Amino acid sequence: MSTLTEPALAAVPAAGAAGIVELTYRDAINAALRDSMTDDARVLLMGEDVGADGGVFKTNSGLIEDFGPARIRNTPICENAFVGVALGMSLVGLRPVVEIMFADFLPTAGDAIVNQLPKYRFMSGGQCSVPVTIRVIGGGTGQFGTQHSATYESWFGHLPGLRVATAATPGSAYSLLRAAIAHDNPVIVYEHKALYGRKGPVTRGEVAEIGKAQVLRTGSDVTILASMLMVERSLAAAETLAAEGIAAEVIDLRWVRPIDLPTIRASVARTGRLVVAEEQVHAGGWGATVISELTMGGVAWRSAPRRVSLPDDYPVPYSPPLETLIVPSAAGITAAARSAVGR
Image 1 (cartoon, helix red, strand yellow):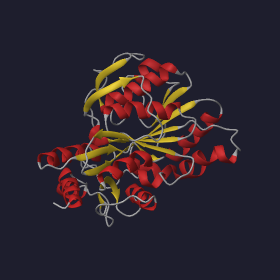
Image 2 (tube, one colour; image 1 turned 90 degrees about the horizontal axis):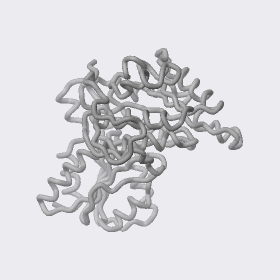
Image 3 (spheres, helix red, strand yellow; image 1 turned 90 degrees about the vertical axis):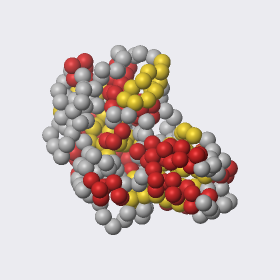
Image 4 (tube, helix red, strand yellow; image 1 turned 45 degrees about the horizontal axis):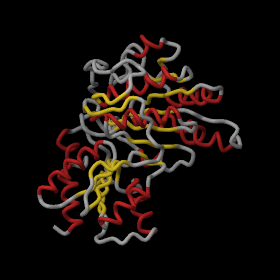
């Protein structure tokens, strides 16, 4: 299994810097952690190899030198234990950020994430806040193999009391993480390993609105709704479609829970057509929830909605050509949009 070792932080201004800066997705995450920890002494980071190693994808480089081992804590390989410790920390006033090295490892912390974090405030009658942020690295591409390539955001989007965010750009990687850390309820923030080297504008100090999607491109013929890597591929598809005279509106979902149905509904009400691009298996994916809610809400479909997703029958393979084949592509999204408009 390979890891990314290129240096981070070369482009990250000092904590507290304001304004729009150009950062990689990786460095945007680092900047969000740095700014949150500078603004609030209660924020700390914990996880496997997050200290001197800077994390497996180097998102945490330089943090231990600036904030020390009391606030940048390496943990044993025992996810359920250290997520449980984070719960305890939050109950005594701290705001821990936990890094889970790969989304495939989330089930090992299943009890803490499913039965403890999202239920504790409810079971305490609102007396206890649980400000725990879980950063999760997921997604195919890169040939990391079947145990290191999942995302699973739809799994955890089913849990009342838990917020689930998906970062598609450097700007959203920064602002979503800032929002999660500032929130008084537990939040899982998904990062996609294929995006760490992508560069884009980041507004330092921006805190995203919980549960708000983002329209990245306007269009009148078809709505394309996507998350994480699929946003980049949907934008590429929209460019191809534009050359063919099809105006696609592209929406970055950003939050799987809560889903921004008003923004999506307003777009589909204009276009009458929807293509969902998600790196989830087809059965039970968040796209099915969106289509169900829109249909029950009386959306007047001009054509049946389409979903471009992972196949149901097998996990993401190690083989490069097989991985490329099953992870949704820009070409697949383009074809679905053409079909939706009757081309």
